[in-house]
Amino acid sequence: MTGVARVYVIAEAGVNHNGSIETALALVEQAAAAGADAVKFQTFSAKRLVTAQAPKAAYQLDTTPSAESQRDMIARLELTPEDHRTLIGETERRGIEFLSSPFDLESIDLLASLGLRTFKLPSGALTDLPYLRRVAHVADRIILSTGMATLAEVSHALEALRAAGADDTPITLLHCTTEYPTPPEDVNLRAMTTLAEEFGLPVGYSDHTAGIAVPIAAAALGATVIEKHFTLDRAMEGPDHRASLEPADLARMVSAVREVEQALGSPVKAPTGGEAENARAVRKSIAAAQAICAGDIFTEDNLTTKRPGTGISPMRWDEILGRPAPRDFREDELIEL
Image 1 (cartoon, helix red, strand yellow):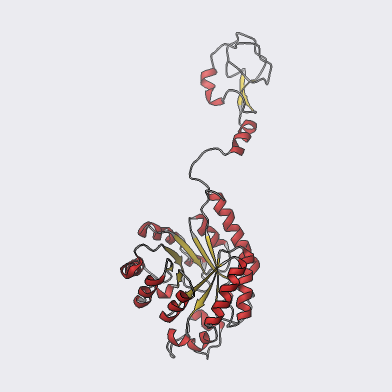
Image 2: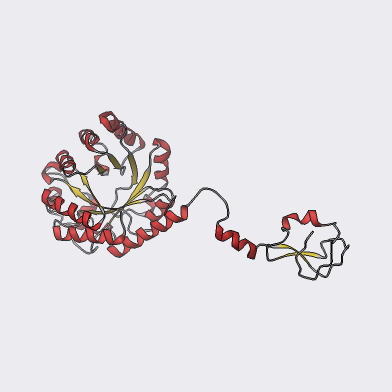
């Protein structure tokens, strides 16, 4: 794909492993098989992340037991440091990048100690100043989701990152709508373009819609990163499965994004090699509408335009009219001067 900008596709496994390392390993396998560039998990401690009284989000109430607290729900979804090492080894074996979004300061440090240099920050971290400062110290690349944020909040987050040492760190902003699943009318995909124009940074899209149409559209609009939740089975219990793709659809999405990459091509408007060949077959030339004798004057009655386009272009019609025929022409013969 020389000359074609490659979209970095993140297959978001998130917490769809349901706390099982075996399921997490299967998710790595499916992400690699789908052709994603990276598979991403989530790193957190339930006790450090939420208070004991923190309520669940509406979508979490719809997909998990209502009597269970948010802390208890996510405690079942933690990955241990050893789980992380196992998953990193599996991603290396399968040729796909391992990412994980940290949700607390200690998790940032854990990921840095495991060698991660690309940090994908969740939307909820955008207003967490201590968190942003910690990431700025350890990240070589930052991908920042902007769900729930105003432009002013995005600006403040960028200022905080840069002030804490991320001046020269490549940062990509992801447009995102934090609804699970996101209704199409709430996507506002043009906001991705607004982010690019406002901040002069590469942009992408973190998708929570139910299908694959919107991330494909984001790629067509110039997204450099696409993130999409996926699961082994949407019928599994857990907060995020319902808004996730199953492996076959993830593969379809990646394939479609790669097609869009190729289709975007170059901004130059010029015929391709294949078009130049077709032009000879489908464009027209000036031809004799009837037999014409040498010396006859070319008129609109004895001339016409017909395929192929290997003769005089019809755009020279006015130039040819009124001139004498240099020789005899048979009906349908292309005119020569």
